Image (cartoon, rainbow over all chains, first blue to last red; front, side, top):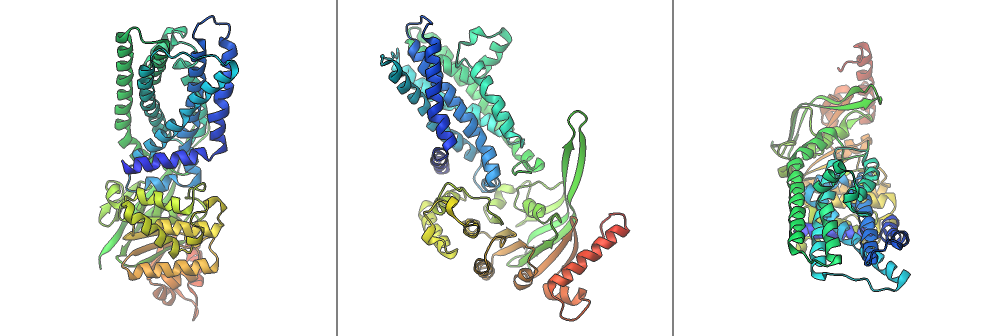
Length: 257
Length: 269
């Protein structure tokens, strides 16, 4: 637990110090919020501002996770620290988990930045229907985003082309998980994929909380499915952990070739 | 004499895929049938040309790479199956400027690795200060590593390699990038480690360094072992003239091995 906290602390420090990360964390949600505000302005939705805040923040959050949590594998590989941390007695999975949680925590501030941006653009009150449910959803957001990022980061350990996959992953998740528009707009086959990703359910929970939870049963059902898909993701990580741990030593993917 | 490193018929192959549509698989053998052992408290040198397989051998010994075949044991444990048991008791230093968090201070780097090696907080602080003094970095300990010179980064690497008081330390070209004073400092550290009973396995291209430090040296070429003995025996066995240095003997052995390989159509000696 101590090393997990130390890694989280180190990761926050390391990420914040990088200009590119600060750009993704600060400028990205400002731009997202600005463009989404103008896109949603004519939507006729009464609570469209909260959607702008949420969508802009989530898009920036995923961007930060993609380019930092997952990109960290690549960065550590180039810095030559990946083999060093791998060969310590601490579980490598725990170190990667610490990095991802640290980044997810820090990246969540993009939602706050998109909130401030929207406030600055229109000075209107942004209504949150169920603040307690929203808080619960944010807790689940950390867990589900971290588990998905951990799963991807671990799979990418098998390859040296991390940056290529990292770029390929950003947009599909935004589209599949309903960051910019509801998944019901997607074709049925795509909706099936969406429903298997825990992030989709977290986005749904956040939206329900902002609108105000009138149907507790529906919220609980989505919460349960989110927990279930996150759980499946974690079991999958557990299963592949040993295999990947062995494979990276067989395939020699810890270092730059 | 207790053997802390045992390598028997060790082999490591790398598969390289080329081509986009019609993929071709090419197999490169970096280490071929290597056998040697290292005794407890010994300073053992692994010498060889670039690409001879020294670094690959070290990477297998420090549990970073899986052997393709053969036996590779450290402290009696298998490097592939019992990696976690081995990692607590060993450490390693790679030459060069990589392997540090450049946006952190030297102290933060060391404290983080102290955590990864599971040192209690109370011990870690003292140990880090002690190591910073040992490598002469205490004055610059709180500066970001990105402001460090090449030699300072290398000294930090040395400190990191000693953070867990390893029973065996593996050093891959540790004096690369070090100025003569830095190199001398490392030599003293290595000799100090030997006095404490620590085993050191190092690779180097500096033959005078191997001659000065090593109890025994192994010479590798094209992944194979071509000679293994004490530097003194190596010089007396293989010298063509009187007073030949280890470097001259090394060059002769490599050239002899190369000409034999050419004669045998590229096969090992």
